[in-house]
Amino acid sequence: MNISVFGLGYVGCVSLGCLAQNGHNVIGVDVLDTKVDLINRGVPTIIEKDIDKIIAEQFKQKRVRATRDFKDAVLNSDISIICVGTPSTSEGHLNLEYIYNSAREIGETLKEKDDFHIVVIRSTVLPGTNKKVGEIIERASNKERNKGFAVVSNPEFLREGTAVQDYYNPPVTILGSDNERALETMASIYSKVNGSIEKVEVKVAEIIKYVNNSFHALKIVFANEVGNICKKLDIDSHEVMRVFCLDKQLNISNYYFKPGFAYGGSCLPKDLKGLKMLAHDNYIESPVLNSIENSNAYHKEIALNAVLETGKRKIGFLNISFKSGTDDLRYSPSVEMIEQLIGKGKEILIYDENVSLSKLIGANKSYIEEKLPHISTLLCKDMEELIANCDVIVIPNKTKEIEEIEIPDNKTIIDLCRVDTLRNHPGYNGLNW
View (cartoon, rainbow, N blue to C red):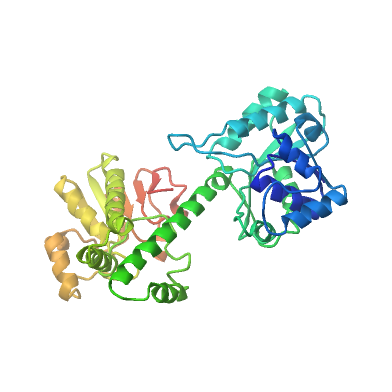
């Protein structure tokens, strides 16, 4: 395959060399003569393990060259991969000027080309950039998207120092496009790359790099805050985090990474407060730990507002324990929400097959008696009774019974846990999806 790579910086240089090593003919494009000259001498534009050998060998094999002439590059390639920089502005926004300039250059050249062309955005960009790039190319080329050309979002996951290794062994290869032909072509391009290939919606492909890197930043800061607390208490912080990472069921897993309702229960709120107070009492600043409870409270507020914005008076809750499959009501965000809705004059009904007032004991019983002293008047004997007598159905927890229920079209659903079988309901509203 003949491929052009726009931008010969870090990502562009690695892509140029690795694509050529996989047997493709690759033309690099850059505005700087120095970078173009380096490639045309078989020398990489960056310092990176193994890339010098790859570029030298592929130059010798005549599979790589570079130019400042973007028309030459586009006319002599089937795919153009945009790897230009997207620096931050002084306000913190991304500067996408180089992306749009590349799109314009590609579009202008496509006026002179009859063959179908694939444009790949490899740079880190904001959601909506794929659409904008397509519009720019359409205007510049007078060609229609998905007839004369297609746009694919393909974020890179290269780390400095291990970029070549990462190119061939990514955690996953992400491809997002509205054109199946382009997706299949790019999947074949990456056939020699290890790992799975995920074809996703365009905006998912565009935002995933931001989500990844923000979480990586969070992990570093979290570990450092734990380290600061441990040092003050004369505890080996590396040993603590080593043991922490041994838990692959919860700590290092996908278990909690599902957008939904707020956390609750007897453990998370209590233990988070305990660690925060441990830091406070030892004069340690822990901004990330301190912000967790605030974020959780804000998420409860979002859920409450979703119910209030319906304007309906009769609200039903299906399952109110803090976690599905239990009868634990302590610090349940659902109970807190019900308490607030009652305070705003709403009529509440509750159905939870696991909650039996006669069986509640100890702290669990004390908590619900304090929060909802008249809970017995709110409980329904079955789900059908609740649905029939309420205008809004709130679903905090998912069960098999809930996944199989039928709710009349005139009801409003506020889904806090993502019940996929209800998502086509005309009155459906997912909390954060």
